[in-house]
Each structure stands twice: as structure tokens, then as C-alpha cells.
Length: 355
Image (tube, rainbow, N blue to C red; front, side):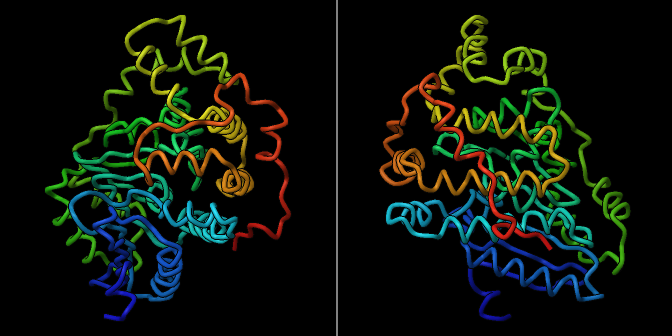
């Protein structure tokens, strides 16, 4: 094993499988810039190796695949007006797009916690496996941010308004609901992952996507919808609007237990983050590709990185952990078109280039 393989990222060949293991279990495998770069190098190597038939992404430890990006380091850079956000998100988003188009089957084990940057590394895979322990979420609006890493693309392709609901509330999906929301493809019991993993190392080099899918089918439970899917008609009625004010009004009118709980959740989120998120989700519905959404997300992310809301959201959730952010502005009605405009501005074509 090389020094890289012994560090925060394990990248090695086992049989016919190119293994990529996120290896920071104490941090629930939160991903750093260096790890993104090491994943790129591993994909280069595995793509060129004719003996590698499949890529397998997994997380070390029992808690989950990945809790997201290394948000504390981003917060520290933002505080001193550094450029880590510009560098990290550019390289991360280019990697997200590469995973989507990777020429060999790419299997992601989305076991346990899968959030933020972890979604970007797994939900664009060709073969996405969730388990009975999966807790998948895009909680960025609670950090003064929005669902990035192609999250706006994924959420906008969920059925009905399910994606709008998950994107704005940051609520957690279990495995079957992740399939319903089109973030995953199979539920495999966590107890059977070692057996599936072993089978993947024995596939033939050159195995087709269909062959890998058939192999995974043999381990899957067949579940395709969870508790949130059952609420889809209600969610469609409450979230089928293009303005946050209208969503809030619908929730207040509904008055049901679900509506009131959802309203309480939204009242804890960044008003600016919610308005930006809803706009990006609606724009993503007519996007022609993941790359188009990533370019738009990158422009918005650069603006987020400069914002007080991002620093305040991370402070309250990650640094001081008081869960009591002071958002600016304090209400959705205070988010003006002028505030929104910089998040949607065009960026130069040299800012984010895909191979």
C-alpha cells in the first residue's frame, strides 16, 4: 500500500474491483480537498487498468459513507476571505460530473449517514446501493447554503415535489425513500454488504452495467418507497409553488400535524438559503444536463462563501453547536431580488470546465 492508501483515502485493486474507501471514520468520512484529488487519481488509474471491471465506493467505520465536506475548514477560510471554497468546489463539482459519466460501472455503498459531499460522490454513480441503515440528507439550507454537488439536478428529477420538500427541509431519507426520490437504485441489507462486496471483486473485467445490476439484484430486497413517499400527494399540494411565501402560506393554511411540523422545520432554516434553493431547483427542472446545474451551483456557491449566513450557519451547527443561528435577513419576505441576483449571475466559461 502506498502512503495515500494508508491515509484519509484508501485506493487499491481487489480482484476485479477498484476500491475507493473514504477513511476518516472519526469524522464520518468527511471529505477534504486532498481526498477529492486522491479520488481523481484513483479513477485515472482504475479507468486505465484493463483488469478493473468495476469501481466500488465505500466508507470506513460503522457510522456511514460520508457526512459531507470538511465544512469546518471551509468556514475558517471564509472567515479570512480565503479561496478554499473556489478551489474545493471547482474540483469537487468536476469530479461529480466525472462520476456521472465514468465509463466503467461505479457502485456506491450508501450505508449509514450519507450527506452533502457524500451524496455527490455516490448519487451520481451508475449503481447506487442503500441499506436498512441509510440516512441520506441534503441539509445545506440549515447552513445558509443550498443542496450543491449536483443536488439541484438530483432533487429536480425526484417525482412530484418530493425533491423540493427534501431540498428545503433537509429531512432525512431512509433507503426506500432514497430510491423513490431517485437518489438510489437498490436496498440491500447492511448485513449482506460484505457478501455483495466479495461478489463484486469477482466480476469479469469488462462486465457491463446490466451484468453488475443483475448481480446486485440478487442481494436486494426490492423495496422502492418509504414513509415520505406515502405523503407525496400532500407534499405536492404544499410545495408546488415557485415562491417561498406561497409555500409558507400553504403550510399555514393546511394546519395538519405534518404541515405544522414542516413549518417549524422551515422556520429554522436560512431564509436566503431557502429562496436561493427554490430558485435553483426550479431552474434545474429545465436544465439539459448535470453539468449545467453544476455550473449554476458553482456560481451560487461562490456567493454563499462570501455570505454572513454561511459563516453563521456553520458556527451555530458545527462550531459552537448552539443551534441558534441569527440569519440575515431574518425572514423570507426580506429576501429581495437584488439579494438574489448575485447567486444567479453568469460566470466565465473558464471558471468550471468539464473534460
